[in-house]
Image (cartoon, rainbow, N blue to C red; front, side, top):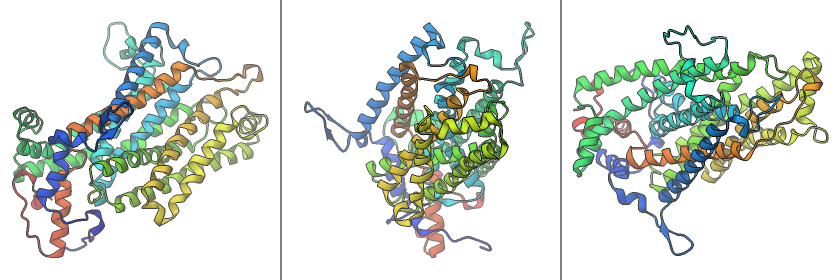
Length: 486
């Protein structure tokens, strides 16, 4: 084929066939005993498995979230640490953090699909699920921080007799439109990609209930050339819709700050800086889930060291852009000569006088210095090094939002309005509760849906065998990828 780029053989290792790929991925869902292994002995002689432990951990924190929400709705947002002048605290910090985590899914699914990057095949389904669950966690915060979540529908421009319309100059309205669009397109893209795999699970399942459920979800998929043709068209259209969202969603979120006149916010570098930071945090979270699941379900031949290497490279590249943004913030403050900007800069870095300088230097360590380990090819393929850097980045990106939002708000143009911000127990309860919700939903996803795209892996295997000149396994039924559909 003219202009054909050879496929990297390290993207799928081991002696695989179409049947073994179906078994390796599909049986994680269809064989319920898979999630009971390996057994871990807990204190008191209780036996459990890693999946049960993580699912139980997530469920515990979901209950903490529900308790925090109950207290918040009954008592109002006064239970949070928000005050004057810090009107935005943990609520907006966590909102921006969760939206950022969801960015890797859209990038891996849409942008890399349009660029025909085959290394996305093993991780795109997991990243798409993370996008949806992270946006669900993020959506709680703008809904609740208004203090009146039961009238949130006022933010939508629907015809009404009261003549009450949203204020389109408000960043809150921008966020509602951006996040709801992002959520809708992400769910559509995720579900469309699952349809061929639902058909495979329908055909492999031996339980009547599973056959009926996966049969309904597969929407009558038979794997015909017409089905594949329509699937390809739908995927490309959704990828084309999703690609601008990679740039637009976090750009609009950054406008919440860049459009303000608060010192440290009104800079034009925020949109690209926030987008790069979102991809940075998103890939870190994909790594944090991919490595343990790869080990637990013995998927080393499908999620290979090559995938980890590529994710580490993307994380390093976006991390350098983020670090450049930190340098530019220092430059803007010094070059402008504006007293409030200089005072804010001093409030961030002075170890002896500034109350929040520890957060700034923690941010530089976790987001700027530790990720530089990824320059080493050996460390990029070390699971322990990758997990360490990914944890560091997840913590660092949260501190970045903490430094930008509440710390900037504590120092305004008027010294008489200076204040301090201290989060409360319910701030932490809400934050850790959403982390629990995310883990809970992710492990439900692992239990009931294929975490790796089966038909795309079989397509990759088919192309690799075709390149080798001995494609002696003919794909069958709907599991096959119709080459003519391409």
